[in-house]
Length: 137
Image (cartoon, rainbow, N blue to C red; front, side, top):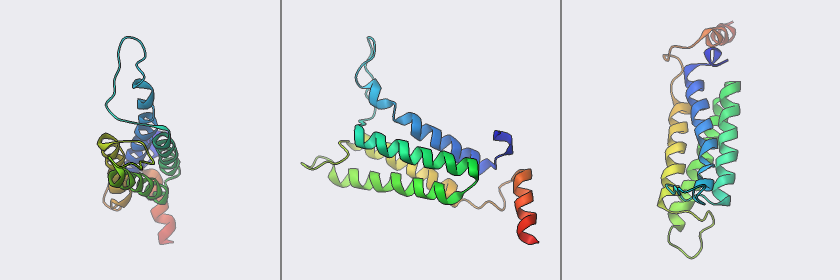
């Protein structure tokens, strides 16, 4: 399946999967076993954002729809901006800190870069060649 995807769709797929897997960092903070890893502060609202935007990016990659990657990117960047503005404030809807801003912003900017990349010169696959021939006819 991955070989049939355009390389930018594969990049979107990887970023979407990483976004989904990032929600698991909420469980590592509770300290399973003798170790406690708390790199990123992730609470329930951030888990919802990560799961929704990650699923949107994965679906967009599989279907080859850049607009879904843009929507996922916008959601992540909006959540990062909200968290940045509310950091260390009494009202903190997402319940995160600067590490949350870095996670959401980094994934959002990565998806934005991949979604806006020029697909004409990026060495597509056979599926992309078929799309191009359909458009020209």
